Image (tube, rainbow, N blue to C red; front, side):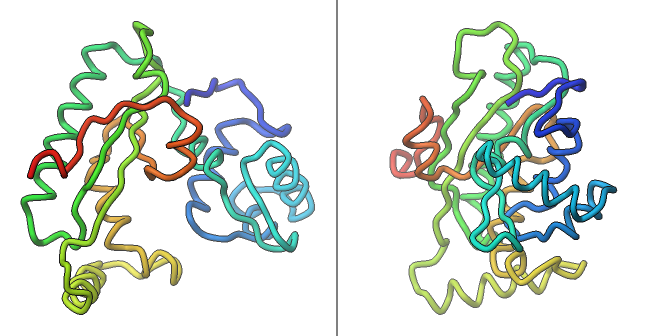
Length: 213
């Protein structure tokens, strides 16, 4: 997904809304917290969250706590940078697949990369795609459940800074894997290979661990 610097979403600059989606991530947020991120009042943030909900970017069961939807996650990964050249797209894909192989061969990671697919503008015939959208699925490295739990806790213990929430702490072994796969690559957006991607996008499989065994 690509956004323009001058674009607005629900009356707010798209860049600010993207920042909010990135900060919230997989966590829940209140209007007060959203206002703190955006530099506005809680009432203004509440109106924004409601408008974003109408647009499918957020959802809430009680009107107090809000979460980012898959569409909001896509916005969080949106780029405002110039479109990519095809040679850059191929380089980003090649480097990503190299990191995937590195992860699966390194038992220090608690998870393995099972599948990688590409979708979005990079999959089309556009000469200058906006970015490279890929989705990944992971699987536990160990079949033994106890061994897997111990390994995941070891990965948490290696983190130097405090966790932002219990959710981040719980899913850290997967979060850190996504960070490594992205490797701060500008133009590369990594998503979950979930039902939304499977049912709502046209995608191409770049890597399937089952085929490499």
